[in-house]
Length: 391
Image (tube, rainbow, N blue to C red; front, top):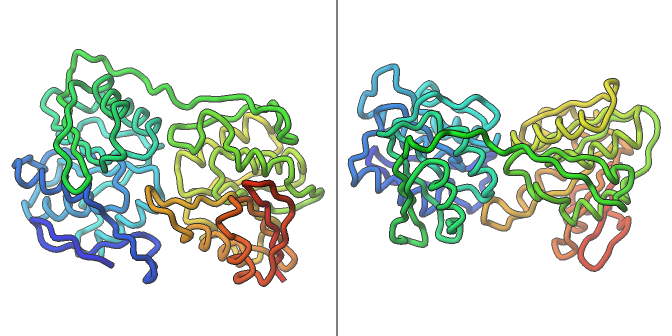
């Protein structure tokens, strides 16, 4: 846990799930820069405030604390919109930790209908330009001529293409000077720009040579990793998936657009596939991909959550996983470790975890520590597929 000084007092903040070994903070210089700007500019945060893309709840918690201090009456809302289940949980946790009522903020996902009005729009620039495009299109009808629009991000996250999106969808845009490698974005709404629908989701056809899903259609909502093409790790994984027949419960862990779980369902029509991801956009994409390629009798479950939390222990026969090794801009094995540990708990005796990853990440070491075994199924100069069995 770390402490963020603000004009409303010092806030105790943490990421979710909280891990005493994790040295990463729940905010960065971009969050600090934005909060300082709101204070020094006197921007009123007592009206309807919308926060897009708050990563661990630092912005929402700080604004909620400020509104509590100002005694904002019932009516105007503070709304957070995020694609991350973990960000939502972190926000709830941080609100409670700082004695702020849960009702002080409304937490929406990117799949929920956005609010109808925004007097202040705060945008934490996401890593995905597509997600930014989608969210600006969705929130644009709520923006009026008097809306204060402020974005924030680290310098390496803000590009000309980022500013062009604000300019094209909302209105004239400029940036601040950089402070601690962070920058602000200022946008003046132009109501002459008619709101238009988001161009997402998009679809593409899978290439040949990827097993049973070759030539099939994949559906991607904005923000999905490699939304325009099949990522090379999954492309290597698909032709080597385990061949199973008969009733089985299979988990596509960190499912993304669901192509791996869909391949498992097509290869074994008797399987029940569980698609799970912490991204609301990913699970929506997985369901759309699955429905596009399977019949009405195909069995599947779609879960937004923290890895395999909530899946009953000993209830799964096979877990398929292409784990991420980045948390926003930070490289970390925290997510893969949680995924592997959760997989071992969810698997039945004799159940298997199949993992694809970059060779240099050394997942075999972590798997041997957690499962007591790890076998190389196949590899190439860049990727390796590993199999671990629960014994």
